[in-house]
Length: 235
Image (cartoon, helix red, strand yellow):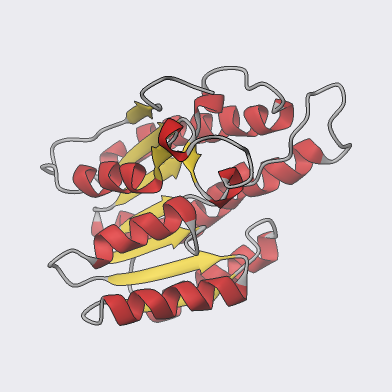
């Protein structure tokens, strides 16, 4: 299978790459992230750990439409079609609607919504032609409730969930499953300096396990949405 993961150099994206790389089935994993150095390091580490798998990497700023177009062209030159697409790239600027930076909404819409929208559109045609595949959108509990100190972020995540819901309906006739992962706080690098105990948060591997297990269901089944929170609830 060909597995395409954005935001793959660390956190949830890396955990997803690891769980598929550990699979007994052979895969091609396409890892995409903005930071080229960190992405290269991650790819090399995974290749050493899982030598039976095939890894490709592409550093890309998904906030730029031209960069997404170039990424899609490169992808089509490398593989005939994607089997699993994970729209995981995201960005957070703290603040409320009344006091956040002037361009906060535009910036987060570019990364948290439009990157997935444009990339999915570019990669879908071969998937639709072969009539199979999975698309996972990493949303947030901020997609379903107001998020404190996250005005534009929450707006962008509401939009991301709306994108996923609409895509789910559109892909039904093409036999492509669309799943929206509505996740609470997951311990990643961004939480390392937040003075919150690691045990209070979910692990990135929790999200990876949900995605991996979903791909093992029968073709007749589609998990449309998963809401997963820390055991003690949201922070």
